[in-house]
Amino acid sequence: LAEKFEVRSFPTLKYFTNGSHEEYEGPREAAGIADWLRKREKPPVQELEETQVAAFLEEAASHNAFAVVAHVKRQSVRAKALQVAAEGLFGFRASKIRFAAVWLASSADAKKDV
Image 1 (cartoon, helix red, strand yellow):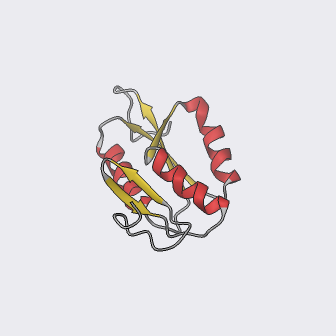
Image 2 (cartoon, rainbow, N blue to C red):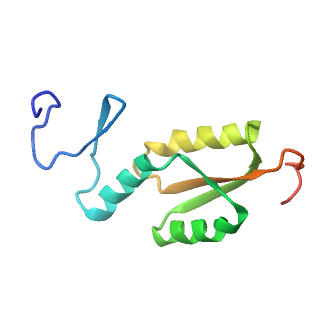
């Protein structure tokens, strides 16, 4: 296995999903490894209820991360833009940004303040 996956030193951390893998190249400390794994285990955009927003913001702040919470309609252009932004920053090593969406009712006017 070490030869197949080009393990040349220890520790070597690789994350496997759907037959492909990604190697960890960040700092060799618990916080860096945990952040790297957390990004891969959660969807790029978390779905929240309005009552969960404060806890989401507090959790991000406790990890010295920025947080973006969008109030958007599901399947809207804005929701898709949020997803693209979150996926685009996903692999950026210095990125400590957490994204979340609170889904608006289909009858809501997305251009007005919530």
